Amino acid sequence: MPEWKYGYHQNVLIYLPQDLHTIFVYWDFTPARMQTLADFYQHVQPRMQLILRLCRQDGFGTEQQLPLAGLEPGGRYFYNLDPHAVYQVELGARSPEEEFVLFSRTPAFRIQPGQPVEPAGIRRLPPAELAPDWTIPPPGPQPSSNFNWS
Image (cartoon, rainbow, N blue to C red):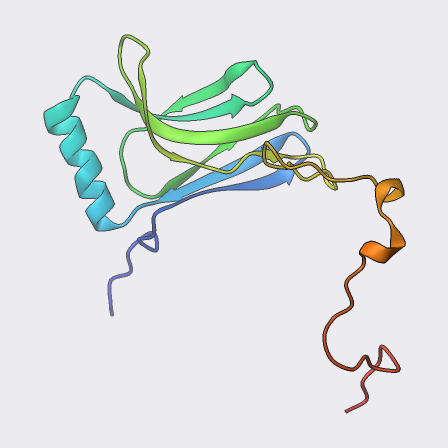
C-alpha cells in the first residue's frame, strides 16, 4: 500500500471562517520552502521562534499569537474575534527581543458577511453619483431575452 504524506506541498496560508467569532488557519509549504526556512533557523537566527499571529488592521496591533513547534503542514483555531474588525494572519519568526520576520500573510479579511474589505486607495462612487450615459454597452448584437433554451 502506498504511503500518503500529510499536506499538499503548496506555499499557502489560508483562513477559513467557522462562525462570526472563530477562524481556522491552515498552512502548508513546499519542500524547498521548508528547507529555506529550516536553514534560516539553523544559520541566521537560531534563537527565533516560529509564530502564527492574528493582527488587527485598525490600530490594535497583534491580538493573538500561537507558538508553533515546526514547519510541517498544520492548522490552528483563533477564537473570540470581533466580527466587524479587519484582520490578517501572519506566519513568521519572533526573536527574544520581539522582532518579527514575516514568512507569509493572508489578505485582510472581516468575518462579518456581506462586508468585503476594499484595498486602500480604492474609492467606489455611490449609485447617486453615476450618470446614465456612463454605461458602456457590450459589443455585438444583444439577445432579445435573458434565457437560452439550447
